[in-house]
Image 1 (cartoon, helix red, strand yellow):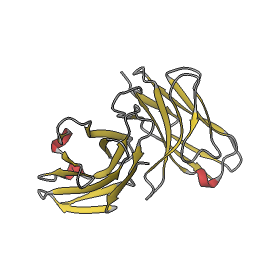
Image 2 (image 1 turned 60 degrees about the vertical axis):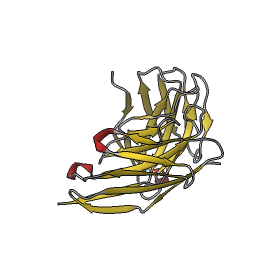
Image 3 (image 1 turned 90 degrees about the vertical axis):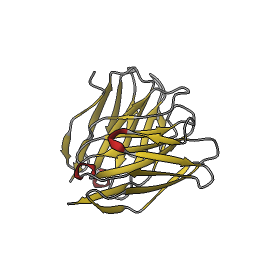
Length: 114
Length: 114
């Protein structure tokens, strides 16, 4: 049982480049989330999904797109990277429904945009 | 609307001393409350959670937290700090919708001095 995994762990991009971050979970969770973590700002929700084929915007969605074609995977895309997107990105998942909402986190992806 | 305030972005204690990390919340519905811990270069992991059963909640690694509705607080304590407790701690509040409305605090970094 791997839990929540993220690929890649590190990435350096140049301004304007694109990339996709992959998140996978093997717990059959309904809900999945993408956060970014910046110093002094805690976690900010980028996008989330409450089920396969559904996505919704979070607190800071601009410049990002997501897809959830399979229940176990949640992809985060940056179409044209900007230095302001330098951050640590965390994926998380939870049971959903009327469960307590405990979230399970991946190890993170450290992204630097030059 | 829900919100979380963690008092103190940094807390420093001596090894063996009491650890007290403060969290106040606001919620329009009975909340679920969580404390997560983040060790360097890792994702967040759950320390403990309050889901309306006992108001004193015990978690892993000797931590506990008490839900006080009258004070809208959920402070985290540990009687005796260990060096291994040095990490960042996040308080979070969720409504009862399975987690997708979870709000995280800005985090408190705990330093433990030998």
